[in-house]
Length: 421
Ligand code: HAM
Image (cartoon, rainbow, N blue to C red):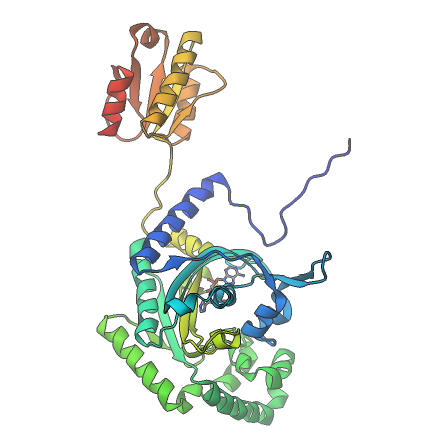
């Protein structure tokens, strides 16, 4: 028989047992935190019709131009795409199921997203996001709530090295005016543009402002600023948002160059950035998208939201030495030696589980010493030891494996009572 070894797809990670505790801790923290703000979970399919993302994210964005996993379902010829983000999915879901008839909705989701980017630290082809979308709220109190709740999350996680950048990109009309001014400006300096920027000049000149090419830095710096030409409504919205953030005591920086890489935004945009992640400095990004619900077939509905990358969040938590993530081990590891003890151990482990404890039963024999080594490696808090002496006396030995406390020999019931306190 020929054998073949496979590797996971490049840029897509396995999460191994030593890592999954941190994931579970983070996910549990996020769920509790989202519930505190009245957000309710939605789960949408990982595959959506390609058009959903092309229409909402925008045809000339990096994501749609070159990062989507799009394929034709050979069984029916339908073009499908692995979701690169879930705001579009969330709006599709709300429109499809008429959720907004019942009033505004606070929704959240968590799960894998897919973008065919060049993999590097903090940037993967399958990555995980946790996102919140507030549909039907005009703001700016809704914008402020989203921003303040993320600040609260960093507190919960003990994360300090994050800072907030905000901007307003105005209404559609004022973006169109700004766009014309930008095209004018860059056309006057066309000779200085690189290939990417030339391509974007007419399709999406705003994206030139996002260019990381240092040769363009001065040119970009001199470009007309949207914030200098905001429409009155957006300017007032932005002012009120800032007043709310200030009254909550939250520091921020206005970054006039912050435009974000998806086309559905208007008015408020924001990002939480960190110096701990090298080039991938954005931990969380979001903003308003007041036109998207209508664009996807719903009634005109204001909306805003954000999403954060969980790989990046975990990396930052590790790097920053923020509050340590608690290690999850079983409550008890049961070791035993001899035939009678094996049977007693089997029953003891079962009784412990019936009493609500996580109990791992040692399998595969070995000396007490080697079994206790395994018990320690399992990160269990206690070992229950069953040898010939214990079985004869109808008792167990309970040995604390973490912290202080002496080993004691007692009945299984007493051991369970002891563990409960
Ligand atoms: P985004 O800025 O494209 O926004 O992604 C949000 C976050 O997902 C990023 O800040 C980053 O932490 C993480 N992320 C993005 N791409 C990758 C990648 N290749 N590898 C690892 N992490 C990544 C959105 O997706 C919008 N849907 C956010 C939103 C929600 N706006 C309104 N509502």
